[in-house]
Image (cartoon, rainbow, N blue to C red; front, side, top):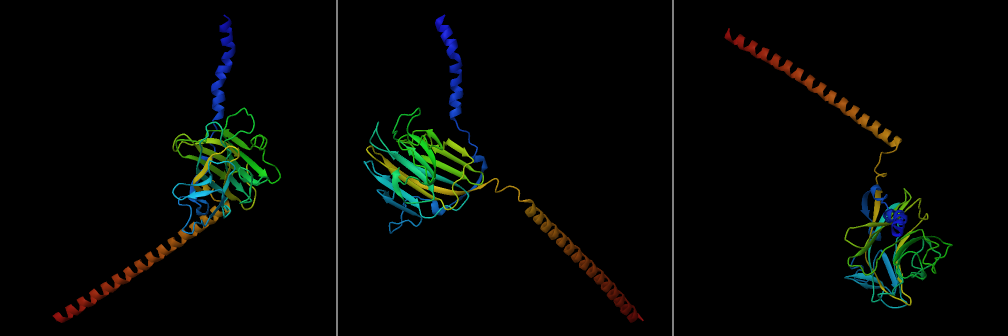
Length: 328
């Protein structure tokens, strides 16, 4: 009977497990707002990545980054103490946009590897530093693909974690961004069989931020996190990527970057009342004008027809009179 009582006492916990798992699934509340995507050439990057002069009009790269024109931009090789970066030359000047990145993190290590890869949307660009190869005390958004845990946590690694920098707060290196974390999820982004991708969506007009990941199957996207009431700093924001290795290492590759301006269903919604009223007034004037023109043309045609009939009748009478006069 003891085992029976023990089973009954543990039953609520067993029943709670599905609900706990369900809570880990993040609902997608952003995709329904996306109406249309328009490519931003200035923030898009594909192979062969560089022109004949080994430069790119829209992007800068440096540090230990190496370009393989057929495969990828390798920010770091699988070697210790390397830092590499890739930054857009132009700021993003649209309110709503989506950044989709195919990347790869791989290496020889099976139990020890790192440190990770970062995506940046910040006011400054090309400033190497201690945070995944870029500067600390940054202003803007950073998303870290952190593959090495510097301390013990209740969650697993690798971990995708975001931080909103205000220019005064330091990155929490010792605790892997735990104290400065905006949002996060634990997901294995390393040594995957398919191309790993992230899709970061920022809707400035709706103050929404979302990160989706593709790690298991092609076109199978899972929401990592969503943040409401989120706004990037006003002014120019640059897109960048960086990676770093320390005592442990991995190869960190950027394969492609696709950035699109987003037109939301709010953008395509009903126009403001004054615009709608002006459009209605113009339409009414156009219809009124076209109606008057139609009646005027009808009047001219009818008048012309009457004159033609009168002329024809008069000509017929004249012809008959002349014909009858000749008989006598």
